[in-house]
Length: 361
Image (spheres, rainbow, N blue to C red):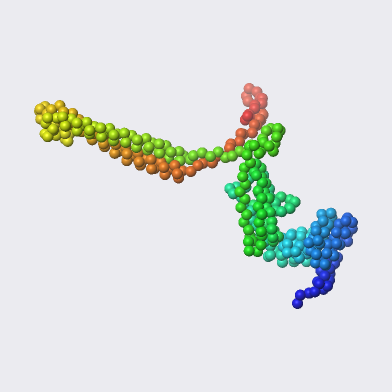
């Protein structure tokens, strides 16, 4: 059966009173008057189930005078608001500072263990890499988180949140998201963009040695890609050569046909053999027949060369295209100049002693 308001209020006040009595009175003596007032107001507001106002008072009290009993009461208040991560952190911190083995310390540790299974978490990842000088924080966190918090689970309270990320030479990144039981653990992918030289110069006007220059890695073709590009050029030139040779072969065939048309003995002009028909006939063949035979052999040679160039050029060109596409690029980080160094080296020899110097500049 659900408790009525009076019984619930008495229960809360009793719990708070019990916890507070477990802390040495010397700790309360060190509290400022304002922190003490805020602490008591927080107790009263919890008893009235006004958790938002109560938590506000307790946070302010803890800032004025950080006492473990205040933090313990914060954990109770946050848990009533459903802020599991805030309550868990408060109980964990209280358990680490309260007297070991006391009832208050055991109570804080038990509450932390109970809340641990209910924590909702987010995980922040960067693409392509974590930028230099990266700092991130959620909502109004006072202390930013660095690269050590990338890729790990971070506990947050349920509800609406903002992730704010800053980094050297990058535009600020902000992402609003909702965290609930259905989305935990939630992956947040951060991809920051570079600031332009003009933006960087505007941030550092007329001083500090000029605008900050963001060095970018140098990208160049790989050896395979370079060879592929050369192969594409060679293949293309070879194909052009094959086409030109084919045109020459066609012209030689045309000249052969012209000579045959003008030869009086064209029907007996055997221009397909390897031997000049004029020599076969004892020099009785006409001059036109002899010329046609020469044009035939030149055209045949040119035709064979054209085919060879076409096939070879196509093969080289296709191989070059494949290597160019698959070769990819090579990224080379900018080299930093070696730091100057200087060192004196004593030496002793048969003819004397002295000092020598070595260094890099």
